Image 1: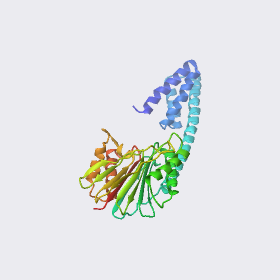
Image 2 (image 1 turned 90 degrees about the horizontal axis):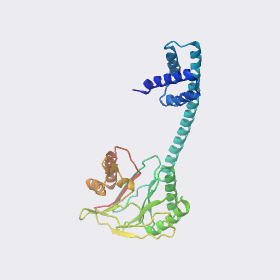
Image 3 (image 1 turned 90 degrees about the vertical axis):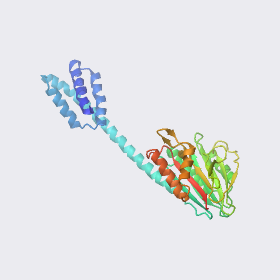
Image 4 (image 1 turned 30 degrees about the horizontal axis):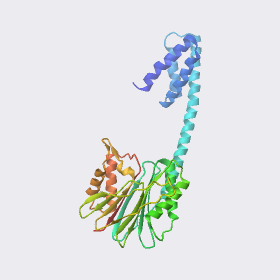
Amino acid sequence: MDFWETIEPKYKDIIKKYLIDKDEKVLYQGQKLSRKLIEHHIAPEEIVSLHKAIMMEGDNSSEQLLDSFDVLLEVMMAYGLAYREHQSLRTKQMALKNEIEVAASMQQTLLRTSIPQVKGAEIGAISVPARQMNGDYFHFVIDDDQNVGIAIADVIGKGIPAALSMSMIKYAMDSLPENQLRPGSILRSLNRVVESNVDPSMFITMCFGVFDQRKHTFCYSSAGHEPGFFYRADNKEFKELEGKGLLLGIDKNTEYREYQLELAPGDMVILLSDGVTECRTDEGFIEREDLTDLIRKYIDLPAQDIVTSVYKELERLQEFELRDDFTLIILKRDT
């Protein structure tokens, strides 16, 4: 039974009760009915036609006909007020939507980064927001010695506040000296910025690593970020990256330990946000082993093709509906 089939008996009951005792409480029921009429797109002329059809049934006196107009008048007045509120809300929603679209476009411009060409290795990266605004962030920077810095961060939170925090991190990084990239010192500097400028209820996880193109080493530090993986080509095994550290913004005096890996031909460093490991299907969250199995499936492809293929597979598993921001970066040394 659709809404229109249920509205006639309700409206008829309101009229009947009002004609019996002229109780204003009954008129209030008509007011509430008006909102339901708008929600289901019932036009005013349809209400008038319904009222006319109901009053033509049976033998109603002229006085009853006149009294019934009290109900119709109350319903139509409430309908007009509710419609005006509805239109005002739609206008505000459209304005907010337009503002968010502009903000999302600005964020994409502000956080834009290009994947560098690396001698002896290749980098693949993909970052997809679950909503219009992205709470994940990744960035590449090259120092004077041609070492490649890779940053990945995630705000604990979503929406516009998270996006603003990411923009702040980006510009804080841009202000750091690029003559020498040291992961521990960079996280210390960013931690002080976050602790001083971000709301205490918001925290940021981050991992920053540096690939030395001459020594083929990857040195990194972590600020409570989702642990990535290190793939060793000689034994074809994945190992979870070490790395513990306090989230950015908790204690401005925090020190961040540095870890170092030596990359042999074919080795890979996989960095990611928790939106990758927390992909959820009908059977629950995927296991980290499921993710490494997916990477292994495409391991012979270039790094960019690997991250793109893994994303598409996980997107399909979630029926094309991301529940969290998704960022995946792979640094793969040439074979």
